[in-house]
Length: 172
Image 1 (cartoon, rainbow, N blue to C red):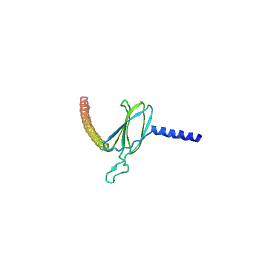
Image 2 (cartoon, helix red, strand yellow; image 1 turned 90 degrees about the vertical axis):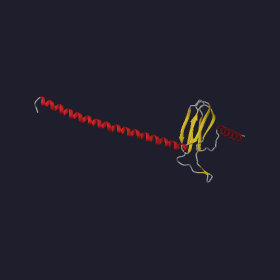
Image 3 (tube, rainbow, N blue to C red; image 1 turned 135 degrees about the horizontal axis):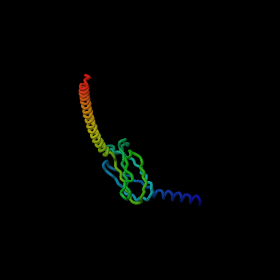
Image 4 (tube, helix red, strand yellow; image 1 turned 60 degrees about the vertical axis):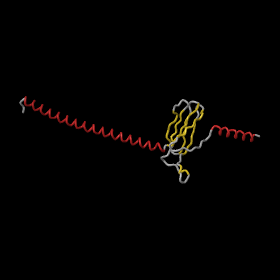
């Protein structure tokens, strides 16, 4: 009888664990964003495992994960505050802890099209930085020319002043 009770307790523990954890499998396109609303109790740790793969239409199968492909995860609490917003690699897991009970919004989207936008933004920043550098370089050049002219004019003025001083004292 003790063995049967242990088996029932273990079976009950497995059933309870199955109720508290569940999985989702879904496909998402390059530009798609999938959001899920989940009722999460207060102070609950949520763990999500994911894997991103490209679908090959010719072979009708998934290709191995590429290094540039990844997943952006954003989680908002019931008040709309961002709990988690982070870029992840092509495979891994994300975790967050709920601090307020209620419906949390969990959004996932691929970064494949975001990489093109990121590259465009990077080029814009590089161009702006180059223009700032050239402008600063131009200003430094003109400042050094102005300093050189001021130094030469000061030297000429000092020589004329000293010459007139020594002529007045009749030393020259």
